[in-house]
Image: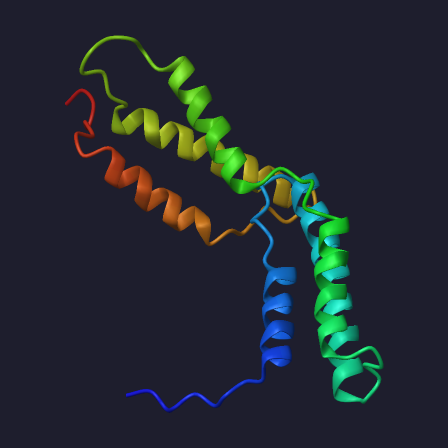
Length: 160
């Protein structure tokens, strides 16, 4: 049973919605440039949010709470995400896989082929780690793996 929610005044609700919208960024592709661009954009937006909250809490929101909400939205609109997203990355991988998939009815990837691809991805991440870069740690990878497993119900084990 949840506790009753307190009434939130309209301007405060609007400011909270603007904060949520400002911080809601698409997940970057697991590529260094996308991750750096995402982090830079997120840092800028967090700074704007902190300034707005500070102004409201310390009585320096001279134009009002509504203005602070509008300011956050305006600043976010001035600098939308320009990096490659995880969704774009996944779409590109699916398109590449479809383009290189063997033609013919009933063809499926074998477990050995899928394991080889996973091993190559792991090796690339290890090489990146040894080069001093941290490979992307994305909780979406687990979801993507689950999605892939569900999408391949007829997974073959390859030759016995």
